[in-house]
Each structure stands twice: as C-alpha cells, then as structure tokens.
Length: 431
Image 1: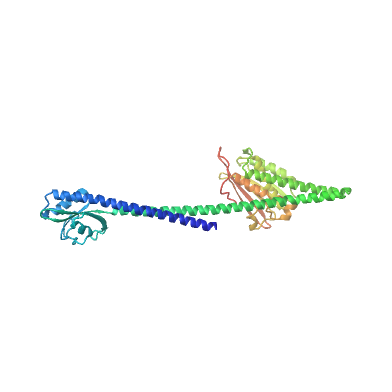
Image 2: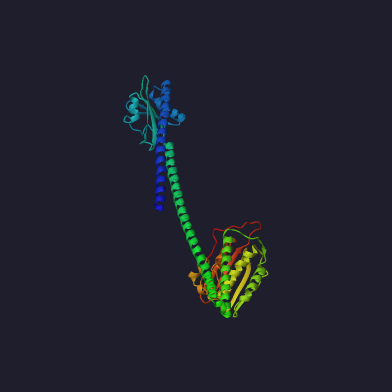
C-alpha cells in the first residue's frame, strides 16, 4: 500500500511539473512571438519610410537597396511588386524565388495592411517572421518585406523542452530514490524491531533458565535436602554454577550495551604480545588435559592504540571459545603487523563448523552446539562482543572452518594515525 502511494505520488509530482512547465512556456513563448512580430513589423515600417525617402523609383535600384539595408539591419529584405514578382532580395535569391502573390503577408500588405506572420520558408527551409508593409511611389506599387529567422527562438523552445524533460527526470529520480530510501528505512526499522524482540526473548530465556534451576534447588533444600550434607553440598554447588552463569550473562549484556552505545574506556598504546600473554596465562588453568595453548610472541609487532580492556575481552572470547571447542590438539594464537594492520589469528583443532553456521556465529545468543555451550557455561554473546569490538576499531574479522578439522579466526585491525578519532564504520567487512 505504501509502495503504491509512493509510486502515484512520484507520477503525480512529475505530471504536475510537466503541466506547469507546458502552460508556463506556452504562454511565454506565445508572448515572445507576439513581441517579436510587433518589433519586426515596426522595423519593416521604418524600412518602408526609408524606401519612400530614397530615390528608388527605378527597378534596377531595388536589388541594391535590399542588399544594403539587409546587411545593415541583419535581416532578409525583399521587394515585391503588386503582381507578386520579386524585384529585389538581400540574399540574392530573387532569381530562384517564385511568385509571392499567394503569400499571406504579401496579400495583406497589398490590401494596405502592415502585418507580420510566422511561417516556414519553402526557399530557405526554415521558419521566419515575415513583416510586410505596403509602399507606393510615383512609379511603383508593391510591398517591402523584412524576414527574420526564428531559429534562435525555436532553439530556445527546444532548449526549454530539454530542460523541462531533464528536470522531470531528476524529480522522478529523486522521488524514486526517496521511495527506495523510505523502503529501506522501513525495512531497517522492521529488522531492528525484530532484533529487539528476539533480544528481549533470548535474554528472558537465558535469564529464566539459571533462575529456574536456582529456585528449584533452593526449594529442594528447604524441603529437607539440607539434612543430607552430601546432597546439600551438591545442590549448593549447582546453585553457585548457575549464579555464576547468570552473572556472566549480565556482564556480557552490559559490555555489549557499552560498546554499542560508544562508551569507550581510556585508550593507550597496547603491547600486543604482553596482552596476549596475560590472556593465555588467565585461561591456562582451564585448558583440558589433551589440549595445548600455544603462543609464540612476534617481536616485530607494533603497539596498537586501543582500550586494553577491550583488546583483552576480544582475545578472551576468541581463545576461550577455541578451547571449549577443542578436545584434542592445540589452540594456536599468533599476531603480526602487515600492511598497516594488526593481524590476530586464533586457530584450533576442534569440532569445526558447517559453512551455514559460520554465517551466523556473530549473532547474539547463537550457539553452534547448544548442549555443549550450556554445559560449559557459554552465554552466546561472546562472538557478538568480538564483532562489535572489531567494528569499534574499523576492523574486519573472517572465519574459516571445516567440520572435524577445526576453526581459524582472523582479525585485522588497522593502525590509526595519531589524533584520529574512533567511530563506527559503515562497511564492517564481516564474513
């Protein structure tokens, strides 16, 4: 319905413009033609008086008079007798010009009326404004006619027509662009609304799950499980795990909100090797028995200006995910400076992912293996946080993975010039 309305609006706007332009120019062009006819007729009358004032009674003087006055006035001058014969023509074409007795302006002039008409010349093949006045001398009765080409006025009309068409096309293009923008805006708003509803639904679900477990075990303890120390201890451990999971979820939501709202902590030149060492040392105690966490520092890596906390959040989420997905083998972390970018790579030999899964892993609350993620305490927000941190620094992140062979994340963060401000890029380059 909205699309039809926009289409009809665009059509109506263009039609209104064309109608207005046509009415305006038709009246304006008619006015210009009338003014031109009046001016040229006045010139023809003055020319007739000049003809009468000069000694041009002899017919052999007519061509010379027409030639001279035509050059002076920059117009065609034609002298026609009462029989319609052309006796003098400033363009020198009297020999090829036929009898002019049937010409409208000539007939009116012979009847004693000074007049002007606009018509096409059969001899010269263009439009002229013909102004004819009657002249009578002692030995001559006929017409002096001045002809001015209307090409310039016609060109003006053509140019105006082209300008009108161009203006209509631009207006139509603008209307279409606005319609497309409005459509994209509405679609974007709908997507945002869907994302908001999904986020609220997911958050509610994620909060409800641990809360339900906590409430259930608390009620069980109240009903008598406290009397059994072993059972009570086990239930309290579960309550502690669920409470910690709930705390992590709230922390991740707050971090995500801070990044999306542009609330950035203090930036500094970060020693990338040292930051990675701190993160690996933090995660090392949780590494499984048959998994190795490998990091070989690169002395050539340049310091990166960023929030140290944001960098650690990015690394913790990527490395922790890799460790959780790996049962045997290794998780390898590397960093290097390439072509003005800090390049971070986190590769594992874990369970891997299908291609359709790699397209969705940055969505909030999306989990490749829901059962494994929940059992390991994942919130489903880690990679979404990673995506937003990468976006915060105008970077890109790519993931390559094959089921059963492992996954590799590659993060490219451009080095920024001193004084360059942060801001979200429109093209994040996520794959």
